[in-house]
Length: 120
Image 1: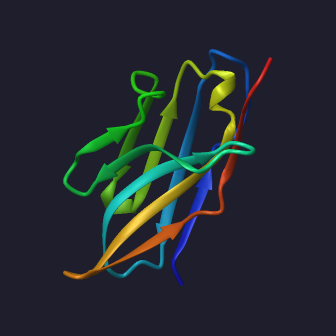
Image 2: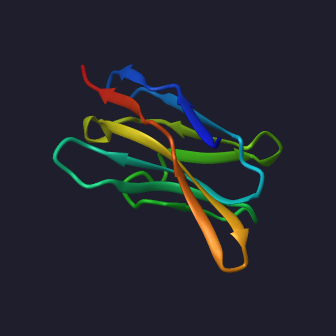
Image 3: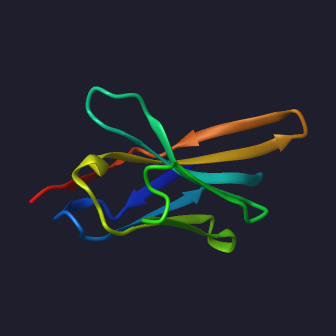
């Protein structure tokens, strides 16, 4: 059974930092892309950052320069270092993994989400 388990969320003051972690287990195929998405109340889920197996990264404009995504392929774990946090970063953060099953089939997996609240 595939599981993505996130940790590291919480309450932080504006300007503070948090580090999210997501460990994937039960995956027998190759994980292509791992990443983070977020969903604020009343808004759609949006991409935060992704990290491909080949080492390419992609960031939302709103977090570029403040957030850093990293990945440990040996541990099937992805991290998100969040610095200079702003109240508008408040959201539930979801871990995502895209798994290559065959050349024509990929599976998409999600974690349960971790709350990040930026408030004074």
